[in-house]
Image (cartoon, rainbow, N blue to C red; front, side):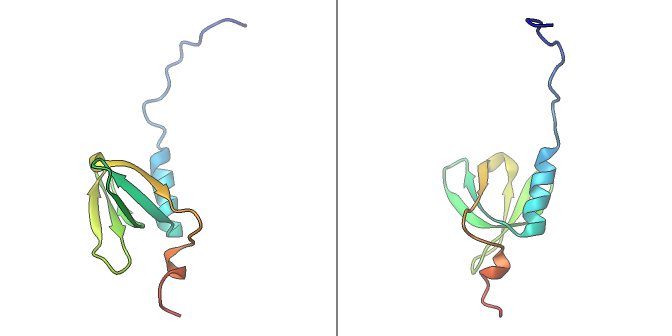
Length: 89
């Protein structure tokens, strides 16, 4: 039926955030987090819940970042898992 507008409302939550964060944690993917004040922090996500993420950093203190302070996060291209960055061999 061409021209008909759907009246089905989009879901409020798709729960894709949980899947994405689980993959980042499990694969130890390096990420860059941009905060609401435009500062950026690099590390890997070790833990998360509904209100914050724990960011593990190399050679610096680990951070707990509240989600409401995060503008966005992105995977750092060209870097493998953190295990490849460590000095352990």
